[in-house]
Image 1: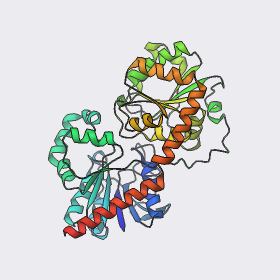
Image 2: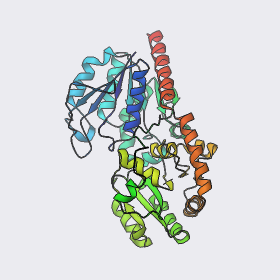
Image 3: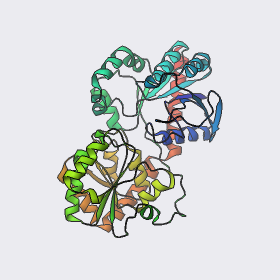
Image 4: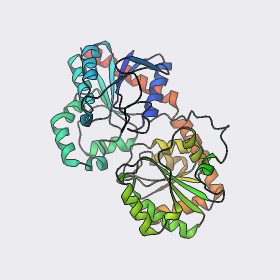
Amino acid sequence: MKILHIIPTYLPADLVSGPIQVIHSLNQELVNLGVEVTVYTSNSGGNKILDVPTCKEILIDGVKVFYFPLTFKPWFYSIGLHRALKKNTKDFDLIHISGIFLSMLTLAAHYGKKFNIPYIISPHGMLMKRPLLSKWLKKKLYLSIIEKKNIANAAGVHFTTELEKEEYLEVRFPATKAIVIPHGISLKEAIPHLDGNLFRKKFNIPKNKKIVFFMGRLNWIKGFDTLLPAFADVVKGDTEAVLLLSGPDGGYQQEIDSMVDILKIKDKVIHTGPLEGEEKVAALCESSVLVLTSYSENFSVVAAEAMSLGLPVVITRGVGIWSIVKDYGAGIVVEKEINEVSSALLKILNNPELAQEMGEKGKRLVSVEFNPSQVASKMKNVYEEVIKYSYNSK
């Protein structure tokens, strides 16, 4: 079975566009299951160009990756990728498209249909209600002219949670076959050899401080209008708490700084910038709780990673995995309200035994529900089913 995976950015650009690491993990596990996976992507690393060879095969953990230079960056158009799709699409059994609203994804759908190669689309939350509000007119036009047709012709649409699927259906997008398979979660960084205070030492955080950790793009959709006032209330009940904000600026840094000043918590908030590798693992291991007050997230890789390391979480019902977190008791699920968030944080910060109990339940949740090899096996079964149906329909 030969699969072509189309994605705008790929490793090593793991801080740029969505859950790149878990997508690579999926591809790697598929290779381990005997699937031949080829990735077509760009050499974009956000604000920089990746230092990788272009237009030639590179093997990463058994996955064949081709990086193509962008010809027109705003729409992620690459003439090299266009030519490769035109020439090679017919040689694959199925195309897996990650994302929407970009030229390379539309081109993949076009050549999939032209050569009768089935394709699956993973929108990664982009077709949920809240994300669609951003640049709504532009997206509405694009959807009506181009994207709805691509979705209607897809053999299936892949969602990572039931919440993502439900919101997709509520907006009344084409009722293509719905596939719900979560991300596989596995932090490969070695933990045992880490200095127990590596992160605290780097950012000069005393041992007595209780770290409330946020990780993600600094964007309005993450709900800082609730998180920051809630943390200001937490400080009143626990003066040893500090809030760590980790992630690249998503166009909201100035607003965050302004709110921090108004709430008078500047001395309690630490900006770390993006974290990856051992630093990310150390931050999760040394924190007391992870908090996400998002308006909308289709899954939340960081919440799953936190639970895999035994860190309790406080998340809103806008986070796609909220129901499973509640079912397992791996954290506290709240409405996006200041009082609920602050009360939940204080409950965990002031009850070490409860925090440890939630942490253990979180580990179990991830090992049972988000096991990478099991997730890949489910995806492989979907691929086989789609290919078989497509072959019989020809």
